[in-house]
Length: 427
Ligand code: NIG
Ligand code: FE
Image (spheres, rainbow, N blue to C red):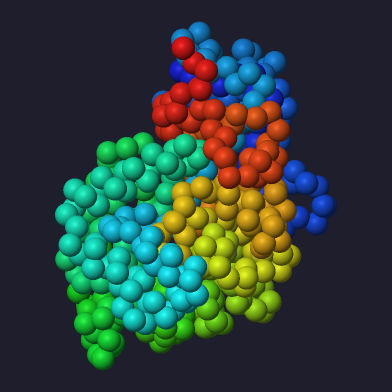
């Protein structure tokens, strides 16, 4: 059998976390590394954009033709898949720093929204912003993501809430995808909240989303998913069904923000429609957790949103994990309820406040996050054929990514086979 040829080899890896592509969601064994597929003293070989081989360092030369390969010496450090942020609102204009101060002073997120601030304030700023400004500001956020080892980011619209601005946001996401290394997965979220001008005729707004926005977004291929915020103060279950069914009819797979503020029935709808993910889940019942697990739908924890809103009703990640859910963890990066690109910090919060184990959190930012964006066959695991999105940590103990919290731990980052963050101490 001929050896694959490599043009990049990552060598002398102390701990390689391959994230088993065949991992099942639950783990009955109690093994703290279950599903991580941990290999000591390892190497990874890459050709073009893809992984061609992973295994023991000692077997590299025999298994792979490395004669023309560039070498990245990991010096005993940890190597794992590039992180995936499967739920963000990273395209937006304006700042809500003043709203943050008001919240610290005692005003609630819901009060501010009801008085025309909150999401509505970001909508005003985003409508006024040029396409170039939206792209440039989001590009800066992507640079921050790279520093935290993130190689794929899902980005939602939802601060336009009129046809032109929703399209402008998705065009910005497409430009963003083309002008920097992180792969952007675009989601249409026209049904984020009812805009102020339709407050007295909300059905008219849902009609607009279903009859105008979705067909135009789909026709131009601007989104892969259709999301809806199904919760108290946002869209009802019946409205969410209309939106998601219209999206499906136009080839957009459903996603849903649900159970953040109260149990809303969104999980049953998501299961019925074959959603890619169900996100938030702060008030999800054990019955709904079992439904999600049986359906194999990714359940996305967003602990940063609970934290940043100063709330204490974190989603019961332990219950969801024990029910067998594929648990993903994400930042929810947005200007109102979680203004941070620090995905590793969210993993720390998921352990301490959602009650999941570090191994589950690590799978939640790789393997299950990949499924939440419909890319489980491409990213989130390091195995032959997968994209070479590879994170080299500054540490030799993978547990430090979560344990040493709040600091960047990116030593080097490879995106589609190319170094996008070079080793810190490289000449
Ligand atoms: O995911 N849930 C709704 N939307 C965002 C918040 C957006 C904002 O406040 O700007 C979220 O938490
Ligand atoms: Fe969100």
